[in-house]
Length: 128
Image (cartoon, rainbow, N blue to C red; front, side, top):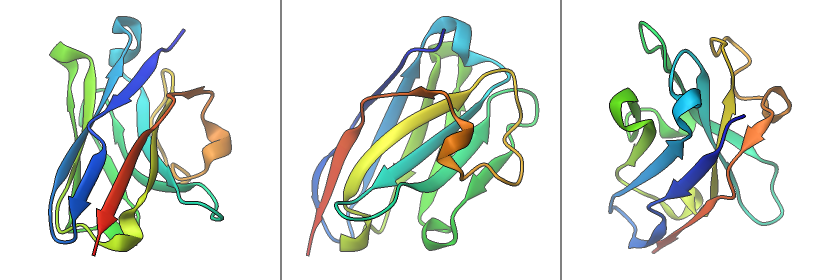
């Protein structure tokens, strides 16, 4: 059973940076697909970035965050990070961590229906 807990959200000026952390239960830290989603009021949940926590650590990004966000893992700490730089007001949303056990991410990594384990979210607000 996965347990996921997000942290690191907050309010930041446009152009600033935040680093989100997704702490996973010890069992969940290896060879899984872990994804950051976000959802703004009135909008659908959007896949932001994904990482495979097994060998190779393949990563995936939605186009709007490429070059600005970096997803990484620290398996020793059972944690997946999302470093967010050059933040824009459009990045404001509730950010959720989700996981799929014992699986690579694949081309449909951004589909929320593919993940059965979710954290409660952390709010990111970018002020212009």
